[in-house]
Length: 317
Image (cartoon, rainbow, N blue to C red; front, top):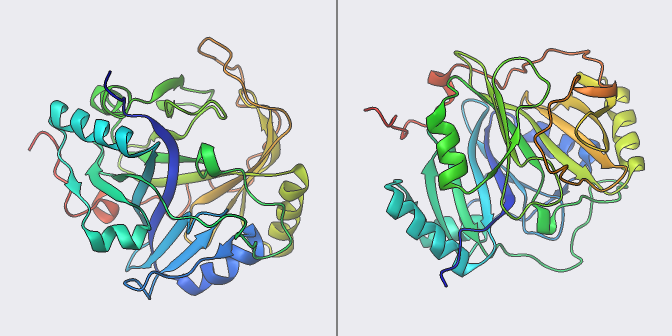
């Protein structure tokens, strides 16, 4: 019996960044991230840790703030090989990462490819880690990552069509979760092995705009949510939404903007998430809180011409 293309979740995220020094202080002081060691072949970037993995967030010097890649973790080598076969059978173009790139990412093997919108993705297995090595940048209870991935990402896309949903469901093997209570066209998806959260990735339709809306990260306790909230207010950072609880998730969270202009959603679980067994259609986005106090789209959201990878070629060309 052949192995399937089983994805755990988001293993790491990479960004091009115009102000690394801002992140060097913001990451540890506000979010409690640890500073990671740079690979020998990448001395100029900034690597941030959330757990015992070598890194979870990478920031590379750039002329514009933009998403560089989303790294998806395959369960292991056999699942990774099954993914390569799936991509070849479906005619999906991909590049195999060379030894230098694998060393930068700290993984055994990886491939790189684009989704139909033009966001670059990577699929890997075997990221380096050291048990009990994570040291937060400030007093912090740590993050829920590990076997569930670093959290979720919500992207704004200039096009939302059947081709995108086909890619996510039939190629990547994600499960459709629903469209939520927000206005407009939005799709939420979670990886096949994710039984911990409602979604790993979501795409929101924003004609003429493209980029990261927010990244959701799960902390170990409500105290970590509250202390981060206090620090954000003390430093007078821009809030997007106040403390609240979404309809579909038994979690408490808030949103604020970081130095690159996208938001972090800091999330504390008040009870384990479970699949309701049917597609939800909530009346409201949140059952309490989540007052909108900042701009819905941050400065990270730009035109596709500004942020699309120059190597991306639309499928209709």
